[in-house]
Length: 353
Length: 115
Image (cartoon, rainbow over all chains, first blue to last red):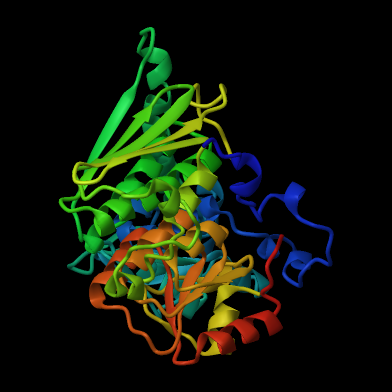
């Protein structure tokens, strides 16, 4: 009953340039970076950036060590502060109160009139756009795009100046946070993917069990998605994880639709193969040859309305796995075993897609 | 053709959390209401067009990593389905138009099956 899976179940990855057929590039593709296909990893990163712009607070990314100017200070002195500290603007403070902001641009205006000896108060911007330290950085981003300013003073709840934030601070903050996220997932993957190297035995098997309840459509597919994620963490090739995911989903749904009391879904991972099995206690299959035919289904009308019962479940499983076996006794139950061989380079370190 | 342009041109309703759809470039599409057919036929990053709106479409879409699900004929997923889709990062879009019309328009817009 071994099915040749290489051809039928190979899933084309449209992002891979080597698999792309000869054709005229789309409009987006001719427009450089922006037109490039977004990989799943890219998409995740984009979502995470969006999340981070809400998660990260202004005080986490702002510059807190402040260089400030007083209104009486001559512009030439401020220019020196900017030059030495390699910054492009300073807040202006009088009696501990923020009264303005002076940027390099303001100094350039003064230089054009040869007035570098003039006091800060003569050239500073008094119209202040501030951002609160406890706000999410998304509100700072909003203010940057509305005001087109390069830097914003950060104030606390008492409107006291506590720092400055630039677009660069935001970019840096997000990059650091992303890197941290990435490292955490890397560490998880690293630990899991070395399981088979670090634990020495003549034969190491990792067994995952899931209890599947009959008629529990609400949780249908949960075990399969957990299994797919576990395999990826263990360093499995993404195509193998996908094949396992599809096979195990169909098996999981079969337990939900067809069994009397549900059953157990079991995944056994070894360095050279993955074995998935389901076992239930009834009702059993009277004619196994019949259920293996594409389109044959005993699902009820109600189940079919949900899009199940196409009679394709076992056919799909057979396509995705290297070996499939069904043993069934009417009145006793069914055991379904599915096996996928793993090329040797898997599970011995992280494999990039 | 990015997902934002598709949403605009087909006047699709966005059911899940907003995000920058212009960064998503679906590669092809697949139409079926039978989940096992979708499992067998849909490629990752494609659009899945279906009139099914119940919870299980999310699990299928997540396993296959489809770009988005377009739910046709005015079928409305319940709040649990939308919540699950948000949790799994699946985009749900809906329209009152029949599947045939959506498929035809997508094809005209250049969303073809890439072999």
